Image 1 (cartoon, rainbow, N blue to C red):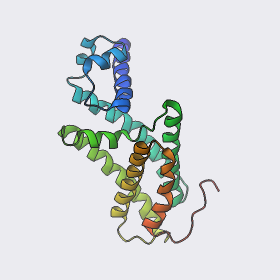
Image 2 (cartoon, one colour):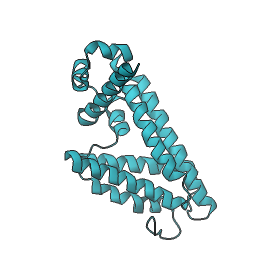
Image 3 (cartoon, rainbow, N blue to C red):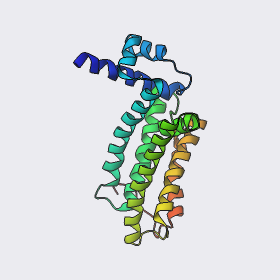
Length: 205
């Protein structure tokens, strides 16, 4: 059991790294198995298709990201400070990736949305579910801020959708220009979008 589980993790890890580097469409099963160091037959033991592998990679990535988003957005900090921390940790992760491999990897979900949303219905639906969950999580924080009279936005759900879209768009620009510092614009833009009543102190201040 341990060996088979280890082989599956190797395939997932290799696929995730290759997808982040080159995207999904250009990859073949043989290349993924070679990178994972497992025989090709192992792939079909765990995954019925390359699409099934993509869904598994997406789910694994979302499990980790959702844990981080929950930790940040459900903390005891004031609502807008929670949002700011989310943006700062996103920028820090992109900067770390840029320093490590020389390029900004961007958001896996955003990258796959652009590449696959019109090709694979199962992947499109899964990505849509993930982005809707992100919107729900941000909406909860904005609604909390509205109850405290810290923001003036009327429709917190649509505001949350705009905030997530802005974050995703700035990550896309960071990838396009290979410059993670472009994410520093997210916070002031978010304050303007939400109609924040007062300037917010830095996180931890």
